[in-house]
Length: 550
Image (cartoon, rainbow, N blue to C red; front, side, top):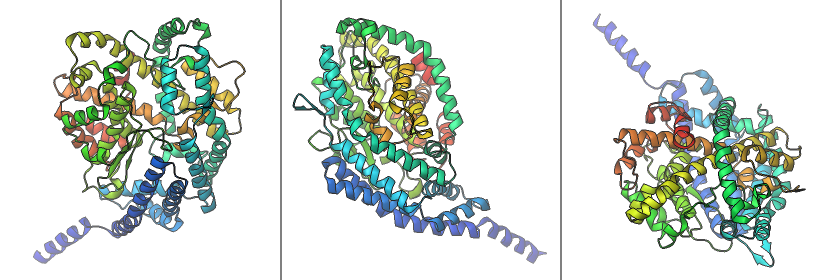
């Protein structure tokens, strides 16, 4: 009897250990990690050099490194093993199961012909270089993005505004044929592995349901239709008086940025002067230090100021998943760049404060939109009156002066952005469904429907192609809006759990909460599960609507 009990115990212990499938997967993960770690670092460093210099050789090195990684994930034998392990349903260890899911999706989207894969990467690299180095010329004067934004924000003369706005779109004609070619390559790749088009594939392999995303956008469109119409009518009245054109004379170049995705600063107070005498980099550094998420090491490796040949936009990059996190910006001391610094450093602290004990494969955000949510949560602070009072040492009189206006700006910003994101989502969905259709007309029909912006008479140019995300960050833009929903849900939870304390500046509880509930979990669980655990409920539009629409 004693021997029988010992035998039962031994068998029980053996059954709790790794089975043959788990052993196979562990071996695969170890080999894969050893292979891709240096490739990721090589690719990221090459991309960083390309973005910071505009050097043609650096762009080629970046493209070559990216191709190496894509080829790794296109290995059909490795994918067959992952598929076999997935179908076996024998992976019981949660971390191993999660790594299997991530790897399976990563390999699935790369099971395409090597020649086609090379064509995609080469075309992306070519377009990236064109965007990075293109500068429109107006009357012999070469313009960069900051110059264009400054003119669209401050110029009163409508003819000059139109000229500068048109110049901002010139890159579209420069890259449009390449983008259409790239879209067809991507569709061909997606269809070769069983998806109807690249747009559907992108959502599904990122663990999103196209039907669910469609429903979220439909719901938000319905909820924002009337509020947006009302607040835009108020905005249009201000702009019409400002430019002396009448409401029916308002055109796209009257809205202060090339795509009407940002809020025109048109009310009684312009927030830029509040930042003009401050160093926005120092302000951002002080803020993050104050909430317990120091960014000194991030800033030490970053590239923050504009120069010739440098990428004119802003981004965050995690070089090695071991602490070398950097941001690229083109800083000016104004509100827009204060927001951008806070936003990009939001991405950066997410990457920087993940645990090095987390498996390398899972040492990344739970989803693209969850890192966007963190970035937006912090980016919103640049127009928050309480945050500005604390960080800029405003007097009570200055605070009272801006409080109502900043609340109005916050609502206007979120409504404008939500409607803009709808344009991008619907355009990309239609673009990949049929890239041969009249894309110029499609673009303006969506702009008129969602943004209530009039199309310039007889304009038939690829203005859609001037938006860099369509070419280089495809089928991604909806994640920005999902990020806004996540940011509002986090904002609600943080305030509710801290006795309704609404001031973020100096609140170290925020850093602790985010590290524990969002950063350290990384991608060890699906995004929806992470959000449920972090906030106590699934992702919902409720708190975004409550915060900015109602």
